[in-house]
Image (cartoon, rainbow, N blue to C red; front, side):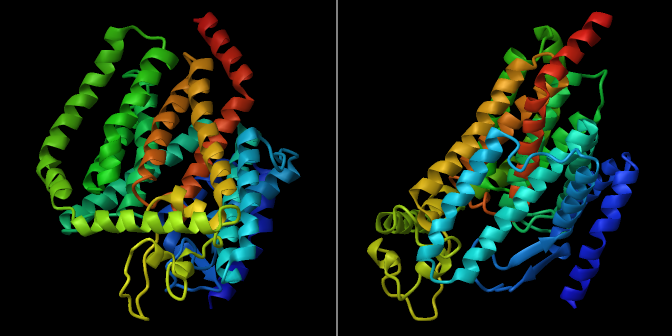
Length: 446
């Protein structure tokens, strides 16, 4: 049945693309539909060659409505001759290099099918990136993208509130895990915090509300890594906004921050006892397991430093007959039916599965966009796009550091959102001169 559904959905790509080609305004609705599809991602994704019991970062060759809409947007952009280059930016180049350096791990993979599941996922992620670039190239409509993000935040906030009153200890919204929700909300909270600082009370109240809702979601997940990142991420966003990207008096900036700070203080005070309890009651075994699995990853990197043990093959290589766990001193008395977990840190996972060269490429890819967001905040100072860049910088800091503690940047939904943010940054960079000139003309007219 799932193949029939997929076929019907795939057949809808050409008509949708043609409709988008005929009416440019419908592109906006396609982007909104793409973001809305993320709220029901689990229900609209089909896994081909599925292995749901496998403990890895990909369990099938996944096709989602998100990807189908992205493909339609790309086709419409091609018809309009607004199609971006296959590798349209330096950041995209880093991703392609990272992707290519993961391919040699196929040589050491025990299960080739499992490896192709992860490779397929990376290809789908790149389609998302290109589709956002194509949409922005055709419309220059960043506002609609921001509105779509805000609605996504509100929907997840409603799910978290619903889970709270239903007695769910760690609600996860539309994500597969509470840590994934927390990381995503960090991206949005910092984005809308910076945007709120830029627009102030005379601008849209939407940013302030989205910031509050996203922050509440982070705290209510009781994700220790995400909560620990809140002061650092918001500090980065505030410093970039106050001293780099905004051109407003300090008194006016304080007037914008004070209401948010008061609301945040009340909310945190209400949740503080449970948050403290979450940190105090964390089982010691959980921390020990993370350390032991990190040591297992180290053994894999020592054994296969150039190619790794095979992309998405951790779930095989951590168990017998392989002895990486025993070499690291973990589970020396395991039974034959025991299946070990996956290392929590995405960086060690990539290094173990794909080798040190692939890990370096991934780090360069991540670092590039953090540096780019900071530089754009300075280059476009005084414009709304500087606020967007400053907010993304704070969100990326939280995401990157949280990924040292929790396994979030191999989760599909989080990576989709990350690719959307990267595409937005690349669009702003490609049009930075024009955007700066437009802002100067607007300021001159005033």
